[in-house]
Length: 120
Image 1 (cartoon, rainbow, N blue to C red):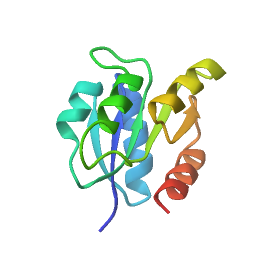
Image 2 (cartoon, one colour):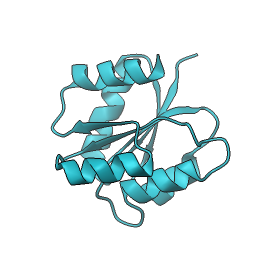
Image 3 (cartoon, helix red, strand yellow):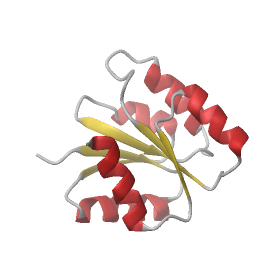
Image 4 (cartoon, rainbow, N blue to C red):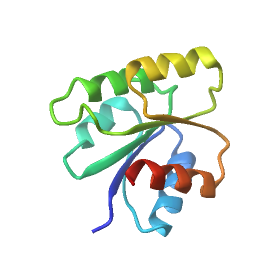
């Protein structure tokens, strides 16, 4: 069975583009509009989280910290997919436990290459 990936972004169009790209490559996709929604959807089937950084309710950094503190998800890969490219933001993400960082706009091949690398 294909791996399930949770994509988290407050932009519906970004979620749709990410979902389409991943589904075309054979992955199952769950979508959330912010970190709180993502935590509600998080389950043992999810093998990777792709999250935006700047979102309402719970941003990407808070989401990573929440995932890392949840039993069973301490080592779940979390890739930030964001317009933020400053080193200070990347450091903040790494400190929180981000596995990787993709800067928007991204191309589908780049996204799939990172996903395949992380999922092994």
